[in-house]
Length: 404
Image 1: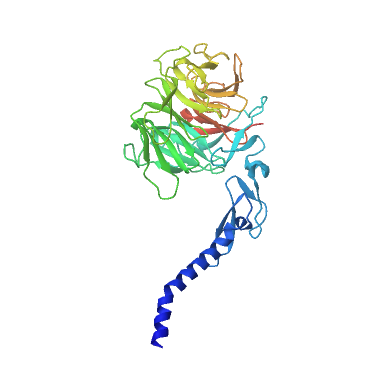
Image 2: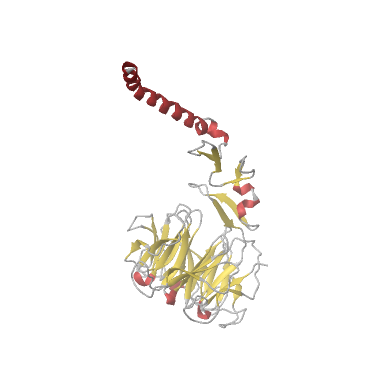
């Protein structure tokens, strides 16, 4: 019996090894065999206890089957990827995530009376108020993010809730702490990391702040720059306008110096110069559009170009349809049509590609608080349905003009 016990003890490590190999082969056999039957557009995983296979559609694909029988199809072929009737659905080159690109008809018109979707309860610091707001970002679900400049915070207003907004960054008084903002002027969402990118102008820095619950402190991405506007392209390059150096630079995450993409030849009105560049827009070809504010024009700098092209204004400041007076907020649709907040003229203008004059699509009825008026329009954007959003800074609110 002692001998048999010793033999069993000697063979025990080998038995354990064989069991491990057998178990490993068994576990490997599920997802490694034909992707567990999940198909090429799904990810296969296994329950560690039961070894049951679970199929999950990859990014950019939608399950048209059920939990027991997952069928993954291109999301863009299912209800246009949720992009709505006036947007084109496509996929991000790296992540395959759905991208909704606005297709605004060339003959589109908007309601002339705006509807207040954020603020509108006078100037102040309560959650139902704004205080000289500036830039904004409209998310896919029509949630509006606003740089609430004089309140030193970023506000979020969800679609349909016009009563109160939510502080999502700052709101802890004016300061330079990572939990504070100082006159933020622009904001956007980095969807890949689900983060806010904030132009914290008073602190001369660009800050990233996670949108995950409980996050209160941001991370400085770029500092020591006298900037105004922010933009991000599909490759997640950041573009920042510098009002002191009269230039625009492109940055990769982690990069401090950036690459010059517009201006940089001193203050001036030459085609290779800018004069107080503010808000930006970058199209899918990485062409950069700049509100060249003190030159009263919008410039387009094709990727790699040494000088820009005037695409709106450029005829001196004034009220004529050929002119702008301190342009700020900027948007460009897939047809190359430029939409710009014409601040001093209290109107929003549209300039089609190659046009020598623009048309007024909102405001233009004098400065005021009426439904068809604007008072210092600054930020500008569109939602996926083609509705126009304008930061009506002097009225301390955001107005939405619905597409007809």
